[in-house]
Amino acid sequence: MKLRPSFVLFLALCLLPSCDEYIAVSGYAQGGIYTVKLNLRGEGGRKVKMAPEDIKAGIDSIINLVDTTFSGYNKSSLLSRWNAGENVRFNGIFRELYDFSYALYTSSSGAFNVAAGPVFDLWGFGFTSDSLERDPDALRKQEEAVRQVLPTIGMPEFQQLEDGQRHPRLNFNAVAQGYTCDLVAGWLRGLGVKDMLVDIGEIFCQGLNPSRKPWSVGIDRPVDGNNIPGADLDGIWQSDGGAYGVVTSGNYRKFYIRDGKKYAHTIDPRTGWPVTHNLLSATIIAPDATTADAYATYCMVIGLDASREFVESQEGIEAYLIYDDEGTMREWRSKGFTLR
Image (tube, helix red, strand yellow):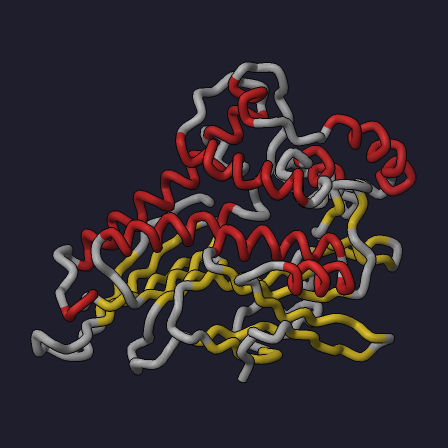
């Protein structure tokens, strides 16, 4: 989440008062580049009363707030100081995201757990350098290490954190990007924006694109080494113009090979081990990006069959699941998932 100098790209499609005026605001955030496309003409054709450079400054301030709160790579962030053992003063967004995560932790029986930071560290997918890839002797020690750490990663209620009763090592990587999208989208709606696409690693979209059609989002094919978003697509999801979070989680970008075996970054907090099922990626459509981000991770933990059952039981949630069927890549999508 380290920030670097960023820039604004402005595109005016029409100079008449009643016409759309789309801009694209871009910069650096959370280890990559963010892009926010929005129409300066809001409800009733009223123009947003803020200059593009000020909109960019507002977005950057939100991203900076998230970075200084949740980044495990920013050593001065609230999260880093908490994980280092400090008793910190929590801000509002920390509590909001923690409470959201705790609700999913309890409803998922621990399959989603932001207090499982020590387990991610053991496998080299957290904020430390511990990794089987870096330590050749770690594999034979791993079973005992996992066994020892599992009893320590239960997720307490937020009040226990504030009262100093519990001090778990936290990791919000499974949900922070989606939450950032929602914070930016909420701020833009407050300015009167109705047409937008917020891409900060994960996506939130609402309304129409510059072609006056609902937004569409490509779904990457989950092939190991497909590291460039949009380079190799399995399909394209088509919006209906509503407000949606769109998030894909998979094990084809973050993994390593040790002694011929693949160790993926999706860890099941209930067992402490990387998942080994046949679900390759899960794309979730939800009313907000926070929920889509969390549910995509959850599905990657629980696997294909449980994911299908879960999605079909949730109102307002759609999914596109890509899985391996004895060497053949296959897809399953829920009834409301619009694919073209």
